[in-house]
Image 1 (cartoon, rainbow, N blue to C red):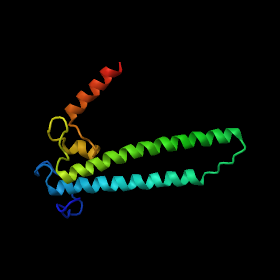
Image 2: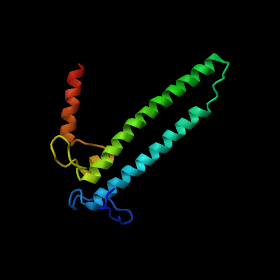
Image 3: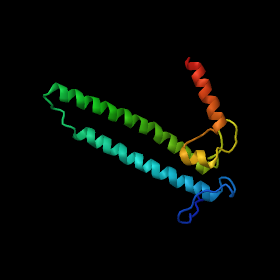
Image 4: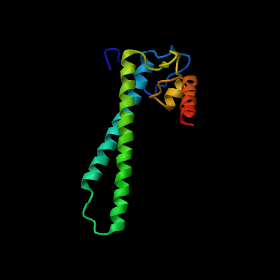
Length: 140
């Protein structure tokens, strides 16, 4: 984060009574996103290590099929993590540039409850519902 960093009091949680996305709230979400990113990177590294240490010379076909299925699931999980890490990094950039917490479509506040549940959210609830409706209509 840039020079706007602030020190958070222990146990700080954003409150609706505060100015929306003030420096303390931005720092709170920056830290939340950073911790999440670090956890995902660690889990991804563990997945890579597991795949590297996997014994490849398995003579039993059923066991080999089971391991291939497990490896496939691990690789899909890793791909999801990669996409999620990209969204987290974009959210961290938005924290830095001051656009975090505001809807990409409408410019309205996304809201604390939604950001607490999904810190990478870029759309307010109304815009998200419209997007999902468009996706559903296009899919049918």
